[in-house]
Image 1 (cartoon, rainbow, N blue to C red):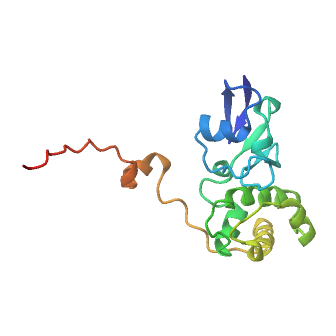
Image 2 (image 1 turned 90 degrees about the horizontal axis):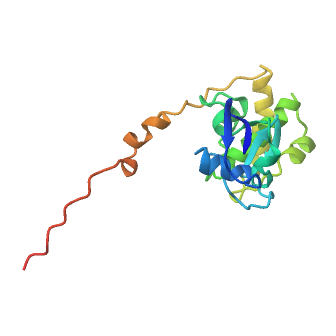
Image 3 (image 1 turned 60 degrees about the horizontal axis):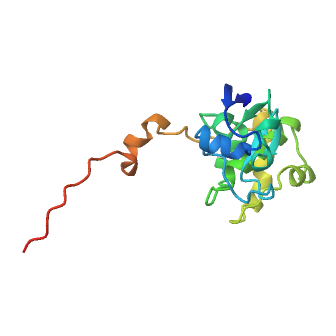
Length: 188
């Protein structure tokens, strides 16, 4: 059994200690913002923070995280007010969005360490793969996030989520439980 903290909440996973953190988060904790990409630690879609460091969760067995503090994209800022989230929205970094949670987490760990990251630091810290090719906007968004963090710049905030997770089923018809429709027998 593995015990650590996820997004400020103590967790106790009764899973095999070799279970990758990615699957504990997604399957046992329903934190689906952390994405599965390659399963080998190369793409970065599964990046989370472990004790403040960007970590590829597909390669981190939960048995090695005893006592750690894990932050996922859901725990970074529920209101989307984190400087990296604000900068990514302001610079329209997202395209399909699949890789973005991992990129945001890698960038957030970087600007926690550096108030003015260089291109070399950005390239070293954010090695995530994006099939859509958001790279031209990525560096500027990270530099903007650092300026937001230090108070050198403000942006019109990205809107907070309009639907609370507990209300999502009411807002999305496909998620509502509806009684089965009665089928009429074919007419003769």
